[in-house]
Length: 346
Image (cartoon, rainbow, N blue to C red; front, side):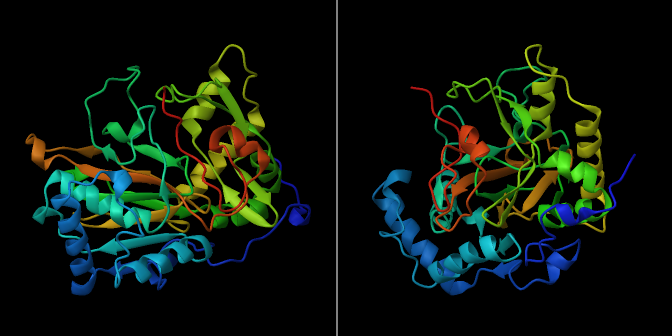
């Protein structure tokens, strides 16, 4: 495989807090926050009002529930997700103490202090259940988070993705994170020719559950720079579906090589970290500076013991500007705009 010897014609490297490698993430002060008694008291008071008044998600707002002691912590997390490591884990929400509806309300309440939840499906879901739904390969409803299979490194269609772990799998299902900023820097240094390929537009086929989207495909880069801001975005399954479509061009060997090298680099222990979410752990990731994936897993037979997470897609008010090519998938590419998610069908 040929390599260019002059990476200086590429932008970067980006020597920013989000450019961590491997276990460096676990040493960052913004990675781990433990919920204390004051934080949980804020949540309990808010939950009492939410349940007693039977409030819907649309009625749960930051103005109504400012969370006096936890709110400032969440505001700091919002800032650090954009300007720090791009990844934060909160531990200690006692999920076993709450009903299913209460867990959803608490997760939604915490999430809105970070950003605006956007739809994760054509039905307008703001809180999505990540669990094996038993769909078979080829079923229209099937999507990666609703299976037990191993997921490859990817990003989701939002600024920040959030998870709340309700129940672990019997085995497997570990999380893996990598800094896409560090991937870019390393690719730029070692494989600048392939990095240039990753900065060109790739075709993406419309997701099979994205039925509110009128466009059958779009184009966007994997690595991009807009007004000096880095952005990484990658979902290989939709890229490969696009290039397999009869009315779109075939994938070039350079595109195949670039994605293969990117994924191999992401998998290396030098670059990525692996951990296991415990029940009550919340995880928030900036999709523009991190890629994430999950191992395959084995479930228990009992329904209440099956692996189960709640997921939110958030548009955040302190987001970066994006390359205009992201408009087809995100709607608005301006910094701080409401963007991302799937358009509900009408």
